[in-house]
Length: 87
Image 1 (cartoon, helix red, strand yellow):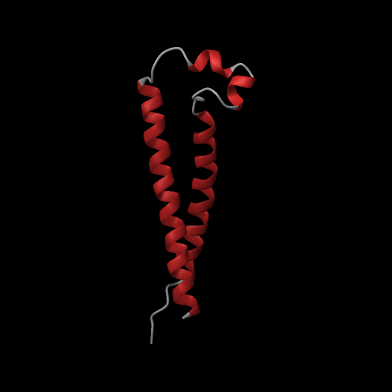
Image 2 (cartoon, helix red, strand yellow; image 1 turned 90 degrees about the vertical axis):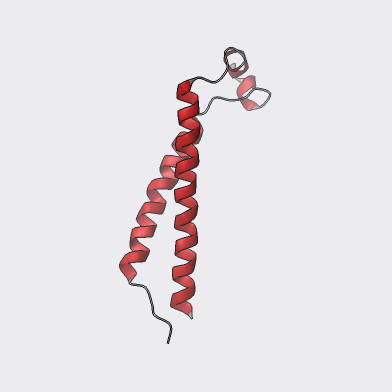
């Protein structure tokens, strides 16, 4: 018999998934456009071609990657939990 995981595990992952989804969306929207796309149509192209990346932008990149990894781990964890429940 395959041991099943408690339902609290799934609820914890779902809450964490919702929080990281919202946070990931906000972090992605905070990134500066790299030019040439829709941002340059609305005047974003002038500011994006000025200075290189600052410390704040590098930290924003790191936070975005970290939240993305947590988000992905929640998806994989829910998939494993669902597989164990259906087995």
